[in-house]
Image 1 (cartoon, rainbow, N blue to C red):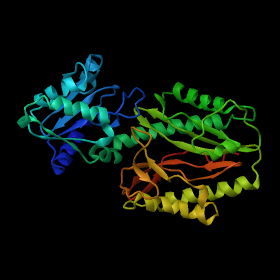
Image 2: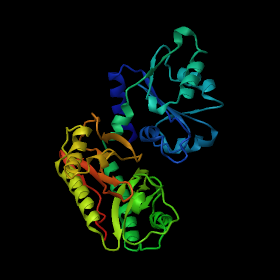
Image 3: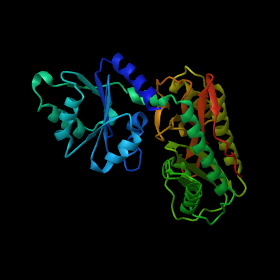
Image 4: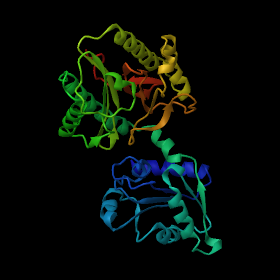
Length: 371
């Protein structure tokens, strides 16, 4: 898939009047949470390295630790072995790419201030007439990644299926006295034993009042009977992420839980049925927000409706207030409305969906309302 992506990238570079695009990562990507643009274009899954894509060729710059890995994973790229800091090797790389006097773009999210300063310092060693310009470019690669290819959708479905199975396995066994941390570990153990590379993010298990915190981390406190439990989890398979949230109840749900749960479920179903290609992220968000507001809990739904999922757990597009991202066929997004009540708890229900034929198709199959 690398060459077609590079061809599309070059078309976008030409539109932006760029002679080259440098693609990296702002941090050492040990946990594969930041270097998605680099991996998407090259297939390279190492934690350190830079790409330089020109209108005629492509280079991958890595140090000794990753030279053989890059050779195996990125055979269409010319390898450039780095030594020392970026201020030492970036100018020689630019010279090897024949970019004298050219325009080199970068996505701001890929480059830290320190890396930008190192590139500038390195280029200052070149004669002024040969010195390329460094330019902040539009998010070209991030926008490309937002629309998934069929093979990517298939990989995402594998991750979704395994995540669904892991959740269902634990939800059928959890009981009062389990700790939140035990529930999170049982999910991770099940997924890893069945092929997950890792988790998309640390699993959230929040029982009772702690469910009012959307990103609560598990504790060693025993889960009591008669409280809602929010479980938000995801796994990585073949580099692609899943994201699933279900709210369950251990024991007999009370009327308050049924009221809140029904509003959230109605909001989610409304969005999943009515979201259409061409909408903005804000328009999609408001479909669900309006249902929750009419139910009397508008102030208790404070986050966005969803986000894109792919090589990263959070990527374009955003489904949220003020988001002007246009929803297009091929995008994979979450739909995850919630209501959070301090002192009582929360309810969030999340599916992963793909935009096909102008509307959403739900990929998640894990059961809802686990009572």
